Length: 94
Image 1: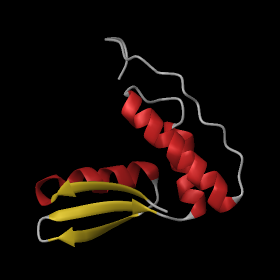
Image 2 (image 1 turned 90 degrees about the vertical axis):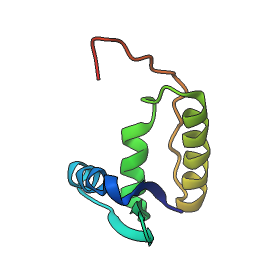
Image 3 (image 1 turned 60 degrees about the vertical axis):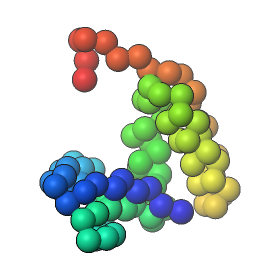
Image 4 (image 1 turned 135 degrees about the vertical axis):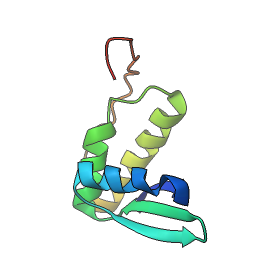
């Protein structure tokens, strides 16, 4: 089980910035021009869930996170509740 963000080599700075902001995870080369930011330990995955749960906009992303939470709960014997509230951005926030 892992949380992965993939970027091309031109955007590798984005992955390093994410890792610096979050404070954990690793960046690996996936292909000749592709890099991945990966979090796969229990604590790190729990932090990712905390950061994203209840803060997503797109239904596709929300359902993906809910499936991820279900798999995380099953694997690590946890009971995190997925939040299905759809957050709508405004011009007054990020």
